Amino acid sequence: MARLPIYLRALSSLAERGTATVSSEELAVAAGVNSAKLRKDLSHLGSYGTRGVGYEVEYLLYQISRELGLTQDWVVAIIGVGNLGRALAGYGGFASRGFRVAGLLDADTATVGQDIAGMTVQHIDELETMIKDHGVSITVIATPASAAQSLCDRVVAAGVTSVLNFAPVVLSVPEGVDVRKVDLSIELQILAFHEQRKAGGPEENGTSQYIEAVEA
Amino acid sequence: MARLPIYLRALSSLAERGTATVSSEELAVAAGVNSAKLRKDLSHLGSYGTRGVGYEVEYLLYQISRELGLTQDWVVAIIGVGNLGRALAGYGGFASRGFRVAGLLDADTATVGQDIAGMTVQHIDELETMIKDHGVSITVIATPASAAQSLCDRVVAAGVTSVLNFAPVVLSVPEGVDVRKVDLSIELQILAFHEQRKAGGPEENGTSQYIEAVEA
DNA sequence: GCAACTTTGTGCACACATTCACAAAGGCAT
DNA sequence: ATGCCTTTGTGAATGTGTGCACAAAGTTGC
Image 1: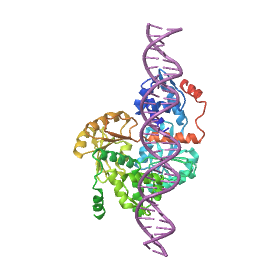
Image 2 (image 1 turned 135 degrees about the vertical axis):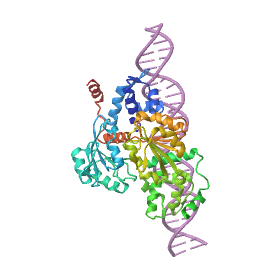
Image 3 (image 1 turned 90 degrees about the horizontal axis):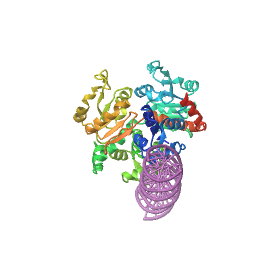
Image 4 (image 1 turned 30 degrees about the vertical axis):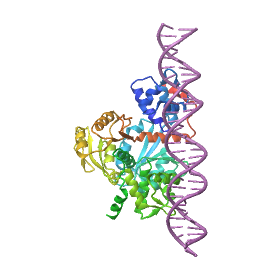
């Protein structure tokens, strides 16, 4: 389930505060979901709660981590060291959850060799070597749209089966390869859509506006 | 619908290549969705297709833009000028879709005054003034988790009703305020989950591992 | 003008997610 | 021990999204 990471975050926060047990109701509020949904999600992992008491925070934390595969280390490569790539390289949330960044790669010779977040940027030609030598299993693509598909093909050919894509294109991959896409512009567009709805919806004189727009 | 921005992107790409009309099947492939789903989505906006021919690219582009509210300009403020905030400030995908960044704000006095992407970073004390003076309607929060909720409260109090949150916390907001969350770590966790599934699923000796883990 | 072809728009069935509501289960006080 | 209280886990109902499959509609060629 895609909500497990959210529960994990809420539980981590509770554990830091020293809470020993938590009810489905409390955890649901912290995670921003319905309590029945939370219980049903957790029941899919097994019966880890105690009726009349709730869930033991540390134990549940471990069970969810295990379900998500976070009890093992995942090796990540970041391709594209622009503004976004730099932000990702320095993002603390990776290391703390078992994600180890094996290296940064870029095609720009001015960027190659720079030290970023304690790593030296390598040339994109090293891609296949790095994937094999470090056992990279997840690749982050933070390049311009034009380069994304061919780089994706290369990492897939090198054996990677999970890709996190920040480039604004739909990557096509063979069966068995997972791609997740994060698109900053799309998130803003969805907000704008709702914002417009609140302000009264799209005007109904759209057609005439269109004619002006294309004639202008 | 949350898929409209994806269609918009695919249509933009077609328009640049000079394509005049497109069938639901072609557009569906470009957007990575089922063609029936695409037609159903578009039919919610009205009947903009021609049977036997397809959709006129420019016209559909305009209709979707209008539906999403992109025919007007949206004013955005970015709070938190760390690595991520800098990446966002320089992201080209905003301006090209009608999002205008009114300003960057940070609490760190070493950061305030710096020039980034053609803008001068302002102190967070200026938050309410900036929102009112520039008519900010969407706020991006790219701060550490600890600062996010109180800053969110401030922007909501200042009248903003749309927030894009990059901080790893669940923000609580009053009715009528939209929050979208982007969490880089969660995306990786979901990939790790699927990756683990491919590799054979979680080991069934989890309980004993847990005991070792908490005793150690 | 007519027939063959293409493509849209949508009714329908199905699968999946969500929420309610409650019985079963455990803890706690007396 | 016994009975009350709290909270889980889940059956059932409801809602939502997805995709097939086809009729309606429009185009093109003759």
